[in-house]
Image 1 (cartoon, rainbow, N blue to C red):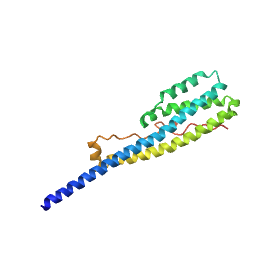
Image 2: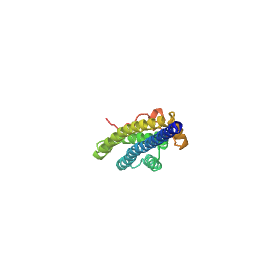
Image 3: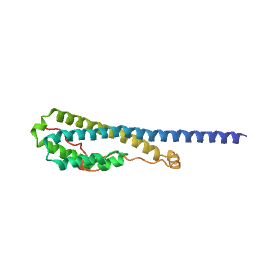
Image 4: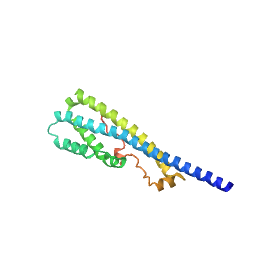
Length: 185
């Protein structure tokens, strides 16, 4: 009789642990998805600002069509981002394109005095800072989720439900580790 009660209590504790662990894993996965969503909003904002910046620079540099076409093609290619791994893969190209655009703008002193250009430049700089903050928050959330996935005994529940790990959002190339310089003096 006591053995049956002890076995029932043990069974109840195991089931309770399983449910709590599973819910924590799902909560962690959802937190990663939410954090990525916030990051993706900032990445999209950057693409939109780049498009506006291209239009302003185009007005001053009509003969630089190759640079504009490259930036436009890259902006089209990077939508939607999907996940951190795909965003990581296009980061070097996007940062190089922004650098080329800014270098092109330096060739036109009247452009550097244009209020629209200066406003877009400031917004792009702010957006780059927000992306860095979002990247940090996202990576912390991914780290917490991965710790849950890999820790014993929660890894047993994660393996049973085939919960997949998520990628960190990092800068894969050392020469693009810094945000593009958008400051003119």
